[in-house]
Structure formats: structure tokens, C-alpha cells
Image 1 (tube, one colour):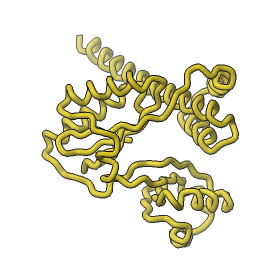
Image 2 (cartoon, rainbow, N blue to C red):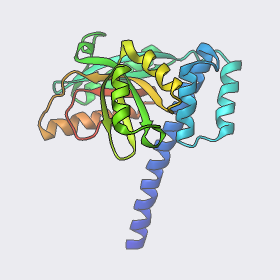
Image 3 (cartoon, rainbow, N blue to C red):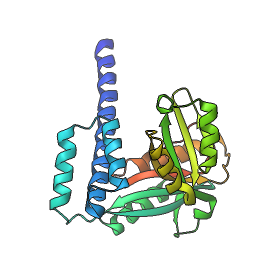
Image 4 (cartoon, rainbow, N blue to C red):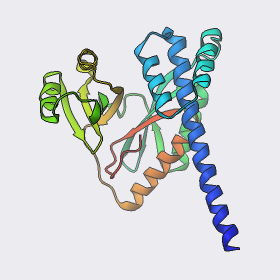
Length: 240
């Protein structure tokens, strides 16, 4: 029986992992489709979506089918939708892509209400965040010393940067986003980037309330329309 129980647990974990992998694939494929429908295949959003697809090993034929379908079929009409929520004093920005605003807003409102939060009016919480560009660069793709690179990116407009064992994260004001992107391209430094909502101040709450907030964030991510979630919650690792 113990062997059966162990096997069941492994299968359960594998099922969850497969589900999350499938969900991630579908989000990236949807992002590729939207980029193609908006501006074809010659735009930064499309190129970034392709980089994301390659980073999680989405098969080439799957990517090609998504591009072909997006070029031929214009009926889905997905659009960006940003929603704002509040729970236990924590502000949450929820970025969505949807072809039905009414459905998405209703589903997000229900999730917030059931978990002790509420959906806020547009603009009610955005002043707690700053829209910034975040660039992701692998250390091995830097052609100079880290010290020289730091001085260079400050000149390019970097407001902050973080370094771990293999990656460098650059935080750029929205106004300097294009300049940083162009300078990195000229220097042939490989990078990925996205625009994110960075909290101006982070808030600490009790462990019990923090767990409820994180539980809500996990549930929101299970919604197929939700792309990214940002909060001003203080916790060890950002869920993005």
C-alpha cells in the first residue's frame, strides 16, 4: 500500500506540473497570436513572445501553427485588460488578455469576493505602483566586467539593478525604456524585457493574512485570462 500511495503522490504532482506547463504554453501561444494580429511578425512584442516560447521549449511547429492561424483568422480579438484588487490592505494589479471583458471582470470579481478581497475602480490603486521596464540579461552575455557594465547601464538610464549567480535584472523608468533597449541592441547584448508594475512601497502583514493573499494570487493565476499579477506585499519571492 505504501508503494501505491507513493506512486499516487508522484502522479498527482506530475499532473499538477503538466497542467501548469500546459497553462504556461497556452498563455505564450496566446501572446504570440495577439502580437501577430496587432502588428504582424515585425514588432518587439512578437519577438519577445517568440523568445519566451523558446525559453520553455515550445515546439517549433506549434509556434508556426499559432502564427499561421493568427495571420488567417481575425475573429478572436484578444485585448489587454488591467484590473485592480484589494485584500487585507494589499494592493494587487492583475494584467489580463481577454476576448470578453464582461466575462473576465465577473470571474475576477467573484474570486476576490470569495477570498475576502474586492475589485476596485480603475486607477484606484495604480498610484501605489510605478510602471517600469525590467530587462533580463544572462551574466555570460556581458562582454565586459560587471563593474564596467554597471557604470554603463547607469549612463543608459538604469534606476536599479539586481544580480544573482547567473542573471542581471535592470529596472528602467518607462521613459528610458526605449533608450535602454536600443543601447543593449547596439552592443549586441542578448536580453529579454517586459513592462512591470513595481510597488513604490512594500507592506508587511501578519503571516495568516499573508497566506490568504498568496492563496488568492495562486487562484487568480489559474484563471486562463490572467497573465501577470503584481502586489505590494512583502514576501521572500515575488510571484510573477
